[in-house]
Image (cartoon, rainbow, N blue to C red):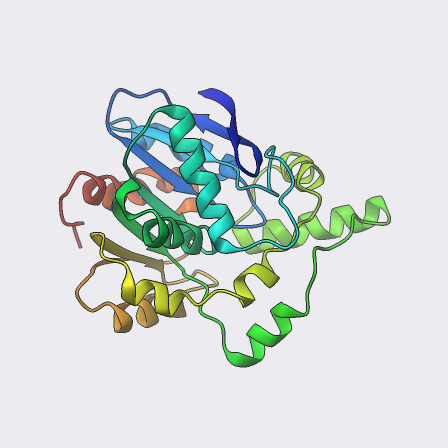
Length: 256
């Protein structure tokens, strides 16, 4: 697994690159995680060149600016593609990463060959107002607070190495994506984007309701629903996670 720091208009972006000889496929992570969430799943993507960026503000990328928008994240990914010499690729994004992937396809349509969104954050008016009131969370005041936040992260995203999660959270600075999501309308963007589209979801995911909402907006899109908890959080289900993504990226309909 190669690692690189790429210059963008918003500072340096950290990226993991499988170095595969196949066509490029970018996976955009959930927040407050980083591209590291996909590393245990990477062997299932042997047919492609897998790119796993850390969004600005997360993982080992530079802190993001303030104010910040979903388009800023999308621009950072477009700049990273320029730095890698990649004109166009397929892109998958989960949760907030799905909104970033969607915005990349909306604002830089020539850069995205095929778009896959998983658990887009559709917000109720009440939740949007609450998210808008949240600013970036401060660094924890004690080690106990660090542990509590990491335990909450592991409970939400399916477990893993608590020490690695603690390191990732400390590197990130506990940035919140909530205000950025509050200012973004995925429904409008999803209706407008013209790239080939796959809607994904998992029955046991915290954003499970998003699957039906996205399909209502785009009934023309391909769709795939994983059973149970999200396979992205379980390396034992890596092949199950990768299969519909790789098939769609290659221009084939997902099975099931």
